[in-house]
Image (cartoon, rainbow, N blue to C red; front, side):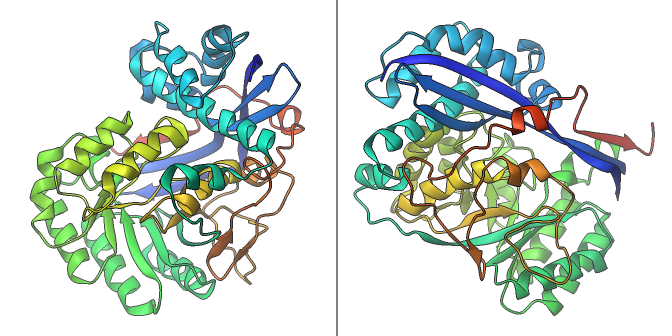
Length: 414
């Protein structure tokens, strides 16, 4: 296919009114959610879409001093000139072009992720084939189009708030409930007890990255070990990122405590995820088509996991477009069964008398024209060509990008 145009659109979805969440180290303010929509257009006028990296604050986290550009600027000023006018025979050809630029390595991984997904969307549209069928050809599998999901929610609230949210999501039929502790060691332990008492069928996961992200208020290694061991003893399905992403020795030490561990979403590349898996310390490996070189990169991770005592479960914490992309991967991949479903307020796919959402993120749903089919904790993977959904380009005008970070942390000692 001949690439005529590549564009990235920075978009912001305001959180109004601003929300404040108390945690052990202080207060977190939630201001907005930022995304980038990447669009690739061929000479014939066909368009492929992909969710890209987030904007300002996330770019500083991703690239530090290497680049302060918004990801949309990077796409428009660096990636577009490299790809426009080229003829792409295989999706991997675009990876080679991006890797041959002068961009820092991590930037290349992020850019290749978005381009890969958009090109797969185009390839599916050209052949009249959903992406999961294209991937099934690679994996030599029969796709599964009804996928169980775990609900990803629970951000800094009193133990009783986690309890209420878990009850609702249990009733909605989700496989699991993942929440974010970090409200203090004793309250975190109390939350584990409450959730263990009140839930029936739903599995419990802890996304524990806050434990080591609170500066002077971060939990010590002995406290983290105690919480991991205790959560494991109560049957927690996994504890996610209990130590910093590159602390492989920390993962190894915690793995001796009998609890199942998860990690990988913060790794830069597919190879970095494989190296984490090679420690033997994690039971669940969390790649993401939006960050780990798209379907191509995540496929290599999945192929590494095959036949080993480690399960690939994709990370997904953005819009429905990112959800659908990861769903196509899970549908086709061997020995991969579970999908992360972030729960935001006013979710049109969830029917409940009480809203279990974390905060408003209207753009998450408005980015596509269709409503996704979610029932009893399962999603039906769209079966149309490519990603199988219609991106609503009105969002470019409806959700203009706003400057500043999407979230702020205010620590007690500031």
